[in-house]
Image (cartoon, rainbow over all chains, first blue to last red; front, side):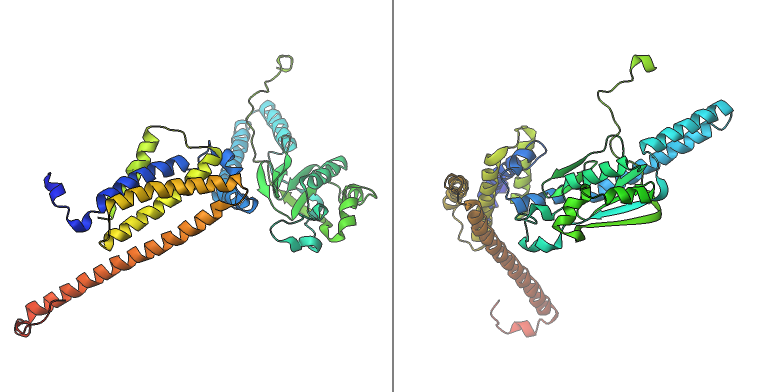
Length: 255
Length: 139
């Protein structure tokens, strides 16, 4: 016997078998661990309420906000550098002006202006069903399609910039529904959906209130679900979503 | 002494990471997770028995494997007959883990308090050799 083993008294006889089984358990836990590769297949076997919980726990809000601030700062730095570079001659200044104009159009800068705020919220009328809101009454909750239609109508009636819950709608934005939440630019938002638009308030309110228009159907369910107000000045944030391209290349003729 | 099983647990996980076996996907991952719970429960029971001086290695090792297999089987069986036995297994094992851990904590606490008391008495005996000359049962 080794000197170590001889020191194991009867009292500590449990340590070795327990450690051995701990080894096995550690191995098993590692095999059962939910990783990036197994997440999607494991998720299917969770009950709905737990799925929501796991999903929400998985979103690192702080990291997202940090990243958003970082992107905004980089955008600002970029603009400053462009301005500094263009300071010398009138040609470069002209180039820079057209560049800034394009960035404004693409939604890469914060914008200020008059417009409307459309608020869509789930109806309180049918909210008795607890965990499954609108499970019995699908019309009583705001869907991605509702927000999408409103955005579409706003653009058609002359909106120059739109933000949904402070997420700017730009060229490759998307509005999509996942489970019980809506994704804007792949970021989750919750009811109420607040759509801010910059443009002529009168035209846009007219378009919103059009008989048989996008909001008429929602109002039929519950008039409290929709709220529209004109604002004299509001600020919309810049687009901070994905800007990388994997497939699109500049066409040869336009070079 | 309690550190040795914890280190073994970490080594076990490290081995699994080192051999690069892919984690079990899908529903079998779920069954394995329940089995892990059973294994953890058995280990808590083993530690408790050890502290109570009632530990028997053969009972413990067979218990570990049978509990793991039973938990796995019950979870699988529940899915075959459309009953959520996951919940039953998790509930029972969770309750047992709680009981075992609270007992382990109590033993540890008593042991620590005893040791402190003994030290205090010894210190007293050293400072007052006259008083300890009288025969007194050692606690």
